[in-house]
Amino acid sequence: MIATTTSNILVTGAGGAAGVAVLRDLVHHGHTVYAADCDPYAAGLYLVPERQRMLVPRGDDPSFPATLRDLAIAAGVDVVIPTVDEELEAIADVRPDFLAVGIELLLAPAGALATCLDKWALVAMLTDVIPVPNTSILDERFVADPGVFPVIVKPRRGRGGRGVVLVEDADQLRGCPHDGSHSRHQDNDGQRRRWLHLPPWHPGPRI
Image (cartoon, rainbow, N blue to C red; front, side, top):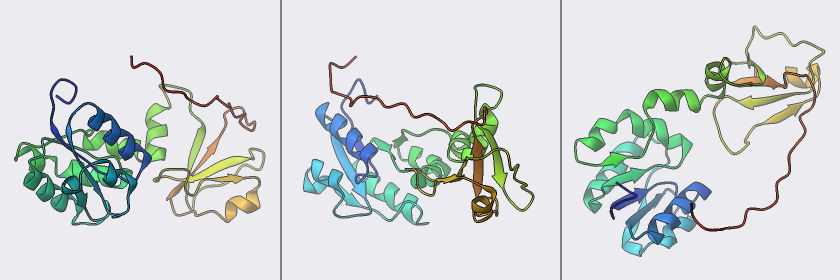
């Protein structure tokens, strides 16, 4: 629907890179676009006319889904595109409430989101599909192998590299949370990963 007709579309996360990119593209293609964010100074809000800017609670606020739905109804929105991780599951859980008033959600099913937003669950699902790092949950049962360092420790949930730590030895690992909220990732060959540096992307013709 978005690709073939003009629509009234609400994009959340107008302060983030994803939200700004979506807003710009939709405006470029002639849609009537509403921008929503919890921050009144979010950059993407100012890509649309003032009457099409919406302030919403944070995505982890219990009132967020209902507030978003009410704003979408009042604006005559056809499609909602959420772009912030913390919003996705909350909106997916009330998808029927949006569909009941004729509002589509550009959003994966709740089960897929639950897997993709949990790094441990995603690695476990992909283990027999593609090569993945040797991964373990850090909890009270975890015992470190002294010969496998360095390793990466990261929160099971989160984005943008927040909380990701390069752990060089067992002493440093013991200082990481062992409550099941973090996971330990090790290259399967036990070697420090080499980084691939790519040149800057330059805009070109659409394909």
